[in-house]
Image 1 (cartoon, rainbow, N blue to C red):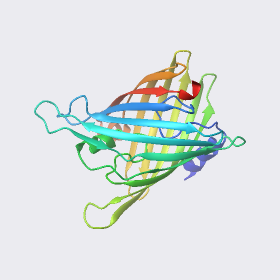
Image 2: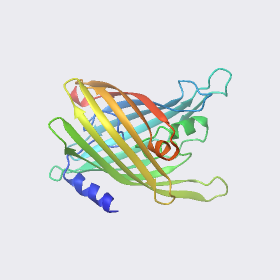
Image 3: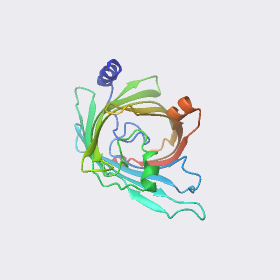
Image 4: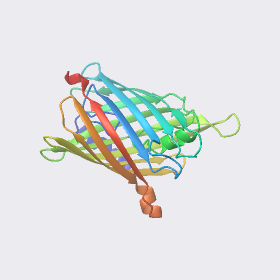
Length: 262
């Protein structure tokens, strides 16, 4: 709890930053981003197995920002494997509220329960790093995330984000529903050069209802272009690395379009 409060206080000293996605150009309003992520899937999966996230933000004014995201996962078997499957994840819709006098961005949002349980959705769950539950089968979610950044040098900034997520999904058996609370906490160190933007990300979440945690580390690189920013990212699960000594990588391609600069 002390760590949570400390992050909140630091965020109050920061400038507003973009919300749900962690992998597009940081602190950029009016943006469309596409992220294609490939996890370390089963041995019978082809290289086309993974998930894609389409995210868009729209600033209504200096105080209000709308955000939406559509996740889609795919499972492609290697030759002679199981049939291919596709899963549309739980879409996200949210609103960001900031102040021109207090440098703070708070985003509240919801995920609509449309995801189905199949092999593609299971692949998608492995790629939702830094996100609320995008592929939980028929899971309705509410979240509140506090964003901010601190100057860490002439060309570097530290982005901090924390918040709570509530999820409700059908129980595997019976008419009851399973309800969970999760705590999200992320830190990103960004360095912006003339041609490249590089980022080091630590993303984590811990279950408050059940003692389940997920932690990942990522390195990302994207072009520092005016309107379009293509990028690469690579990371791994810290849980698997520390607890089991196994390397479970996730790699991806990103493309951000800053349409507000047109």
